Image (cartoon, rainbow, N blue to C red):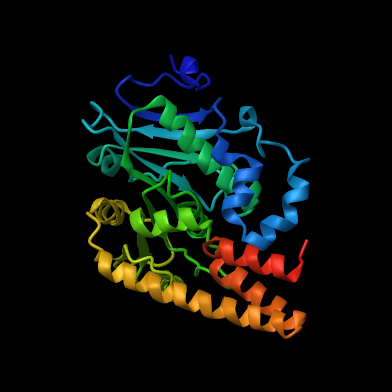
Length: 332
């Protein structure tokens, strides 16, 4: 039964749920192809630079037959609206389920999937992100999911990758659980995806920061990350602090609070988000006008500096502006 549905043979598991180890999957996904990963995760200028190499790149960066996953399916009957899903990106190399999470996952009707060899020593673009996407794709094909409760999460370095996945794939994930790890958007942080995806991220993705009250470094990083999100009009953000906890995986109580926060209704004022977008658009238009003025004055060096700054800060949100400036500069 499992093999017929794209799972390799695994230890015998009760039909109504349980833990499956050393699972292999057989279904690839267009979302995890090399070209789509580059399109969504790189800035427009970086994507243009690697485009010629994509023609010779492998369509899929991974050989699924060699990859192993752990899957936990909640006990009992599936929820009426479909299972929730948490795709978890770990900092460690093993495919493992945190020991005190199953009862919480049961209460929330949430499937858990995590890949082996996806820890902090693995490459982000070539392994960690595609493995998360392929975990999602194969669970989606095996079980009925509630699209509004499909989340990506991680711990520490895995949390930082989970934020990248949520940002680039808001059409797949409706939220991210960021356990003790985060980065800012734009600039030297995470590149913004193409404009249509970023707008969807702003509209429909909820982010929950989950950090111990003793994890001072990551509490600071969370503040920086949340400010950058607010500056980019990403307003559906919540924070959960774990008491008497340092840099550690969430315990059952922390996971319970985080999942409740993820499931909470979107309470963002649409007018506030629209006003923020207008301000963001005005700032982008101002920088674009500065670059155009430099081009008109024959100052190509200055124009390129501004173009690179726009690319770093706004990423795919500035697709059209970047393309127009490249054309005026005669950039290849």
